Image 1: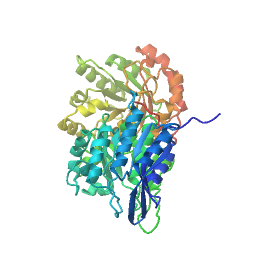
Image 2: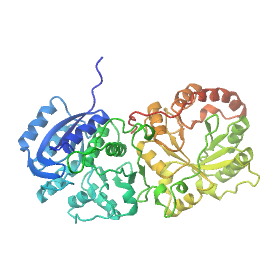
Image 3: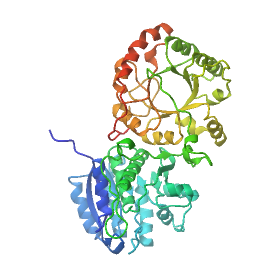
Image 4: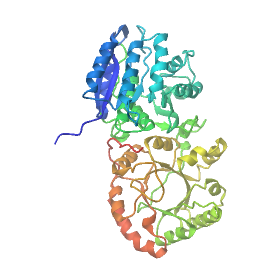
Length: 545
């Protein structure tokens, strides 16, 4: 049986005779993620590791012929552009995007623009004002994602392309998005404005799904030729695999980080980054770390507090119960039943506003005296205001569980208040996508929830089920316990997902409601969680949006 055909992307870009950037880097990135790349030559260069000697744009008719040949046999899911070199080349790409999208409702092929306006190593010029204007009027209105650095972002907007301070970057992205791109990623790998930027790269993400600073530790290497090409091509590959733009950005950033980890010298100048498979297998297995995503214009909480060390910036650790069961109940009576049945970790999910304070106080009192860990969903202010019983057992713990919409809705003062209680209050955060996981981990939570792992009718979900592959991916990339949630009804469900290595597994309807139901069901549920195994290396996650 023949293997399934991989998705196809076209890269319309330049040839780097030194083999570091351009179509050479694009091919390595595509191979790393397992997509098929068709190289469309738009520009020839004569260059080495010390700079660009000469640039010669390919005649637009030849670009058109290459695209025409491919369209008959290898139509693209995504078109990525790099060095184009002429207004005619830009016009040709724009026409092909329109031609291939004609009659389609899905907006495909997606268009990823890496606006190569100059060489980082210096040398011959890549662009003039006419080319910049053509980008503005012909490509940006058609772009799905655009990935300029700060200098390129300013040039595309006709602004001073000198030093662009990080505080101006969000406004630049908003202005670029107004010209047409659905998603803007302004990269900051070459920026060193603040002490933090010397240790962490900071990219600004603006997309329909998410916005904020995407932050990752810098890789200590002087060999970084081809990073921009690698990022855009890896991002294009992730889009071709079906990931949404924000998730594709996260995967692209990880591929670049991994490529920097495997950078190698070539020639007398800066060496090249080397994208290869394994970027997303997990840090313990040689993969790249997951970047952290901040909340709006705030840096990730783990980094943003002045004078706070990394360890002090996190909430208390969640210690999973021995049976790895995490029960979710609707009211204080059910919580008391769960405790009586022997559960050691329970969440109160009381959605009604009426009577919430009474339910919370009763639940906290039961948990404190029983010595269990209790989480309260949503009602964070009531929990912080509630007294903790003076006769609480020493091993009793209380915490909050928040969805990311609730987290984003907090005002600056409310965020400050919540973070000020990280000494005595656990925090669990929901996550349903790669970018939500990146944002959750950036907050330094006690645990993250991965869901829905299976289809659930408990509430409407705009997300595809995570399945065992994505849960395993969450576990491999999280430095705090991962709690699996959603659709876990029967012991067979728990057994299947326990083998992915989560810290705990959530059971809602599968628990029952009465103390008798819970006592009858718990032994079988506990037996099913015994199939837990330690975290393993992960493959590529599947799309969820």
